[in-house]
Length: 77
Image (cartoon, rainbow, N blue to C red; front, side):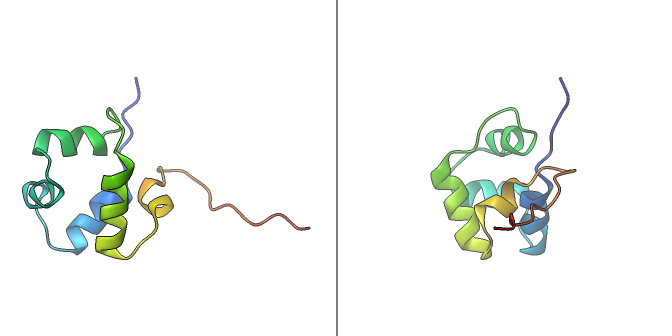
C-alpha cells in the first residue's frame, strides 16, 4: 500500500510554528493519531478538519489536497 502524506496540513503546522505534539494537544488528540491522519491511514474527522482550516484561515479542500493533484479549472458553460 502506498503511503500518502497530506503535505498541506504539515506545511501549515510548520508555518504556524507548532510541533506535532503541540498541534495534537490543541486538537485534543494523541501524536500517534495525528501521524496516522497525515500518513492517510486514518480518516480525519470533519470537525477536526474544520478546526484546522479555521485556525490557519485556509479551506478544507486545500488541507486535503494530495501530492500530484492538479488544480481543477471551472467548466465552461
